[in-house]
Length: 69
Image: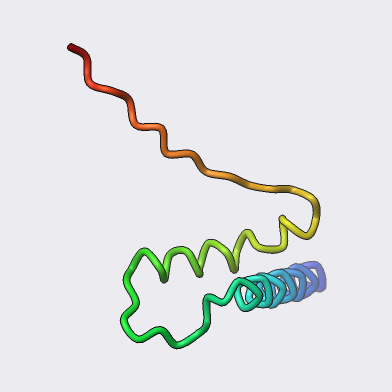
């Protein structure tokens, strides 16, 4: 049972660091209307934000294939 509580503490610390990363990027500023895309960006930053501080720079590319002629 102790390993579960240590894992929970690590997850909470990870999410707090992610929230700090999202705050640094200005995602929590009151801009009025928000969309699902903006909420998704904030959630992904909270989850993956600490990776940037660890030296990992996750990037997503959206390469859309061209239709054939």
